[in-house]
Image (tube, rainbow, N blue to C red):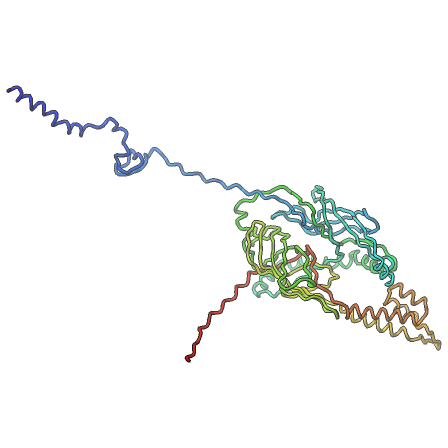
Amino acid sequence: MQFFRVLSPLVLLPLLCSPATVAQSPPDNASQPSASASGTCPEVPREDALPALCAPPSSIEEESPAAIPVPPAHIQLTIPNGTPLRIALDQRTRIAHAGEIVHGKLVEPIYAFDQVVIPAGSVATGHVATIAPVSVPKRSMSYANGNFSPFHKYEVTFDQLTLPDGKQIPIHTTVSPGTAEVVHLVSHPEKDSEKQKGKVAQAAENTKEEAKSKAHEAISEVTSPGRMQRLKEYIASQLPYRRQYLNPGTRFNAALDTPLDFGATTRTMEQLATIGGAPAPDSLLHARLVAEVSSATAKRGTPVAALLTEPLYSPDHHLLLPANTRLVGEVVQSKAAEMLHHNGELRVIFERIETPEGTAQAMQGSLEGVEVDRAARMTLDEEGGAHTSDDKKRYLSTGLAIVLAAAASHPDAEHGSTDAAGDPGVRATAGGSGFGLAGGLISLAAKSTPVSIALGAYGASASIYTNFLSRGRDIVLPKDTPLEIGFGNPHPAPAQPKPTPQSFTSQ
């Protein structure tokens, strides 16, 4: 019994000491701290971090994601079908039979996106495709007017381009009729005084050089062989028999039937970021007309479209509008030509810009320049409206024809003798007013007062009808007409009037 009393404290002693021993002894995995030791920390704490901090070990560095480079954009340099090549002949070509070689040069470059792919001066060669016969009514009228070699309609095609570097490109084209003399018309809208002063100050530095250049051009124009050539052509045009030629300088629009591929180029995203941005005010956009517009058929609201032929850049040379950007507008004024020689009028404006990439913006643009045939006698007013001016010589020519017709009826009395047939010079001139050189020769050879009177009367009547009684000229802007369009910000929409409060009267 005494033994159990001594043994029982010894048995209980280890049991009483074991909790403290367990609490003081570290666990087997004390060298690898657990995430649960920090409570809510999802990562293993650093060795040098406090236990309460949730931080990764200092020996492990976080890797930041690398920036992904943006690859440059690939842009196809393609000239779409329908693009006109403006060609001026540099050699005289006779219209005698099909197959005659025609030779000319491009007068303006061709752009694809923002890059010149066909430089100005590139050589274009082709041939006369067809020569149409003259109809019997037209031939009879031509013979009646003393012209025994009437004008033949013809078709020309260009089938090869030679670039300045010697590269030859086969092409297929549809060519519109040529224009012998092209005139560049401009309007002169008034600008702000500050802009005018800026232009004057900018141009002052090059005044001497510009003066020298203009003087040289004037001298070249006077002394150029073209003057004598034109004089010869005028004399030849008065002859009853003459050959038909295509003279140097005659311009054609050769529209491509198939697209031309010039490969591809690359542009960075920074270079393309400004596309579709608004041009600076008073910027000049060079474009071509998509379809013909005529005062004879156009009405107010008729849609008009043009395509940029040159890219447009910002003042700091960032691309804003690539080539082939579409300009959309409408006819705002149209008046067809009428009898009694009342000429037509036409005015168009452009209201929207649409880039090939699909962006669009509003604009307010009007014509500031246009290239037309000199024979059209067209003018532009300050607002971009197109009008046709009449030749002031019509009064002189008509009055002279009437005087000659009257003088042909008087006999010639000189040196005491009377010639019933009249003065030979008057007879020849009166006959020439009606039927040209052939009429003058007939009247001179006939020595007949009735014949001279008839020929003179015909000439006077034709002059009166043509210059004063006939239908006036319509304004016609053919397809692919080169345009210069002044850019302006769109006009703000008119403010809506506030509703007025209704007044009520007591009954």
